[in-house]
Image 1 (cartoon, rainbow, N blue to C red):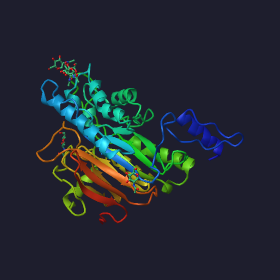
Image 2 (cartoon, protein in one colour; image 1 turned 90 degrees about the horizontal axis):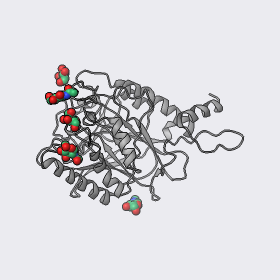
Image 3 (cartoon, rainbow, N blue to C red; image 1 turned 45 degrees about the vertical axis):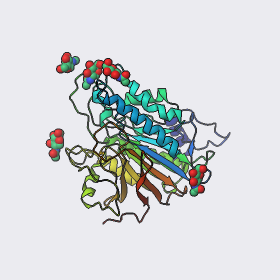
Length: 380
Ligand SMILES: *[C@@H]1O[C@H](CO)[C@@H](O)[C@H](O)[C@H]1NC(C)=O
Ligand SMILES: *[C@@H]1O[C@H](CO)[C@@H](O)[C@H](O)[C@H]1NC(C)=O
Ligand SMILES: *[C@@H]1O[C@H](CO)[C@@H](O)[C@H](O)[C@H]1NC(C)=O
Ligand SMILES: *[C@@H]1O[C@H](CO)[C@@H](O)[C@H](O)[C@H]1NC(C)=O
Ligand SMILES: *[C@@H]1O[C@H](CO)[C@@H](O)[C@H](O)[C@H]1NC(C)=O
């Protein structure tokens, strides 16, 4: 493809671009956030990512315990952000328990969630879960509202036509070694696993609960642009986030072991707990495309199943999967599970190097620490 033609394609896709050098047009700076600070590694070459999940704000507002839970969740978020001081944070879906919300004031819950991130000036990205699509709220509305109330969020919607019915939150965030670099060393991918119900009073029609096939094609077209702008895919690493685990993860549970796959394993995976669990194969275009087009993928990370914390390698695709830690006081729970986050620590921008990950509970204790690298959990 001629450089000129490529420039036009990139310019069309990304709108305003930095000035090209006079004469030869340069490859576009493929930065979807020209107005925001670039997220980068620290000067000592480390990068820490803190992942919240399943906050479930807005349960039973007509009783005391629901709003009390939300206060506890705000306190947990503020404390963990202050302690961990991550370079970037993620909320991996189910921000609200949408079925308990009211059309006229549901966005007040999003204001509460954005609060601790705004106060800490903490850049963050978001995926959405099945409880974020309900008769009174949609993923698209949550994206728009978070963009309005937080200058620190990197959440954005995919182009029209990508994501299928009620699944707009497919996007990526580039992470640079240094702020001044043109090409990132790490891409954080965010996918929309949909589920829940359509926006309308008393809606009982379910939204498909898997990443739409259109996202598979979009991953491929985005990675082609990335290679054109920044060079070979292999020179970058990636971590991917999606609220509901891919269907293929269900088969791993029977063989997790406490030494290789530490962390709670208290939720049995089955109908409703993984993508497309009422049938099989609908999430394959997404899963296949992710694995085919995104090398050096350190992990695919999901929440949804509040009682699970383990990481394990999916043996067909050789991809490491990790559960989040249930962060919110809302959402189903059990005595002793506790609330917290999953951290990832990159010790170097080298895309091939291993990454450390562990669960941190609210009180500060840590557990389930593993290093995700090529020798982690070999399965055949
Ligand atoms: C890198 O810097 C951070 C922030 O100052 C510090 O917490 C961390 O321990 C440092 N890591 C290394 C490996 O030097
Ligand atoms: C939203 O409105 C409902 C019904 O009036 C009320 O019970 C609830 O407390 C309100 N929620 C918030 C977050 O203010
Ligand atoms: C949605 O909001 C409306 C208006 O406040 C309320 O009547 C209804 O109970 C809410 N929940 C559902 C599930 O429709
Ligand atoms: C929704 O259900 C409630 C409770 O059954 C009913 O009162 C209301 O009329 C229904 N609304 C619509 C628009 O169907
Ligand atoms: C899973 O649940 C759905 C909805 O409740 C149901 O239609 C489907 O038959 C169930 N599938 C299996 C495999 O149990």
